Image (cartoon, rainbow, N blue to C red; front, side, top):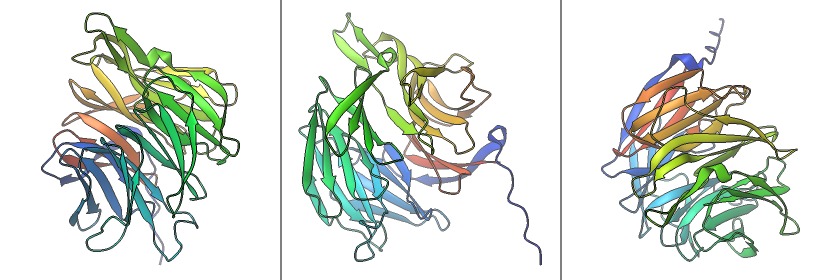
Length: 339
């Protein structure tokens, strides 16, 4: 008996696979590391879990505000007692830890994380550390699974929008509202250098408001590239009028390798970005509708794009490398197959 070959990944053949519905707008989504589930954070203060194959939906209750930040601990430290964990962060500063599996997961730990919005969460490659960031200008490191606060990293002068561990686990990256990207030595708790993503920030004198920030951030698997997504050319901070942009850094040098922009004009924000192991970059935007774009690292314009049915607010890549998940304002998580 011969096994059929796995279809080749081709972004230009990306198509809708399945739709999973909730009755509240969604802010973030993540596949779990096993690839069985997709989770989403919603504006009705709930985390929602769907089984990808059966579509079975489970609502995880415990938060008291909107949730965008989601991260999984699947390393050896997280699996003491054979328990994989989901961490979720909300707009009132709390971080909840949940078992990934089970018919009706309940929070097993609640951390008073930040004063104000928990913007993002990240787990170290070895599963031993949780990083969080928020509106109190701080980055914090927590132990997994115990949840003890290990260290506060201070140095940002405004809201910290995103955190990501380098794949080697020795460095943590944090990025703020004004596009300042800091590289921290995890063991020392010291900032070593900064990268410049200030093109993703604008002060609007008409509304006397700051607008922008690094809304999504990710590394390539080998750690050589860092992508920061957001909005540029802001002309109206109140309405969020501007253009999506992904700043792609050469991590070693800290220099900008490319500014990735839509070939066709689009008004809105790049809310999610992933770097595929095959080297291309995918991003989603929301504003005047939703769009999915694909770029090559050496070309500023996308080589393929797909109109989405609603404003997209987040993006994640399945462990199989073929499927993408997107969270939408209309309350749906939609999965797409790249082939």
